[in-house]
Length: 323
Image (tube, rainbow, N blue to C red; front, side):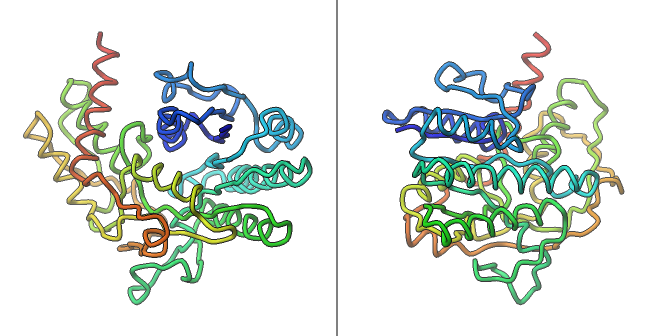
């Protein structure tokens, strides 16, 4: 079975590729930007066929899809996580929306019947009120940053093509996820990286933090990619599925868990105003009963295990650099 992953060298894309390679009947192909960092796929790169392509280039995307003729496409490629998307909104909106349009138009124009998963985000829900949690798939979308707008647009494009052109398209909205390989631009990985740097003596025993009082719905990235596979297998065309733990972890508690795992017990915590978001929902978690009922999926990793593995990931990086 030929499977194409866009954004394959990224955090989630690399974990999905790793997961699929271990399945006997999967032939894994990937699209990623020219000059992208391939560190995340180094350990299994020989098992995939990688295409370098700007997904905003329609002819290149179309040519690759024609060449591969995939059975499934996992469209994960996107740029601009929420906190950073205010600095380059034009690039984020163009890349994420046009990239998705190019995937869908390529399938429509070539007639290739690839079932496609478009990975959305809980950020599409935006400013959720206290009365609206847990958040269901039917909740109103109020995206409050350019990245969220781009993800909501991807979802709407997918819905349109599924209904207007009878294409097999499954739509997911994953809530916060973390784990090994996550960028330091995200809170859990930022904390873990700083602790690893402190342990090896690369920085003073001080961790800089933003708002510790918010609470988020975190799931291990390895559970997320299993959910994506199940969504591809069992998801219904044009339907949206939340993927989440259904609970919350306070950011302060995340930090406490990581500090408890540290070899250095004298780390100071300091606030950094630059780490505060212009807009943020203080407490949000999702309901994914719709997805669980359809697939039987349940997260397998506890938040403690996820954070333990994330901290060790950063420790291993600095250990390799030291040697």
